[in-house]
Amino acid sequence: MPCVIVGVAMESWSIEAIYILFLAAAVVITFAGVRLSRYADQLADRTGFGEAFMGAVFLGASTSLPGITASVTAAWDQMPVLAISNA
Image 1 (cartoon, rainbow, N blue to C red):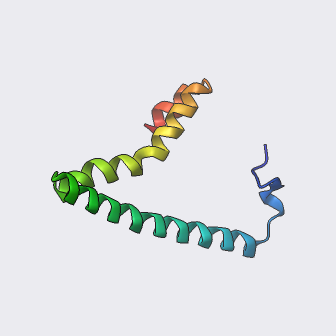
Image 2 (cartoon, rainbow, N blue to C red):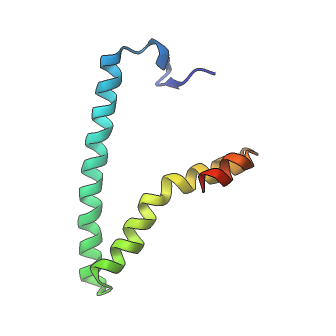
């Protein structure tokens, strides 16, 4: 089954388009990570829990979401080996 993004098989993408997509994703991830750390700092100040606690809980949970989603989706699709090995 070919990998399809935006309705076009990736095998037909040029290397330049793949680099641009990668760089765009890297920029979005960097921007989101900086904002997320600022929000965690603000939440720590407002709640009084402390920055270490908010970093461990809030940032740890939010960065684990893709792995949790992949494991739950694999289990939902009846692929227990993938769900267990991804956990």
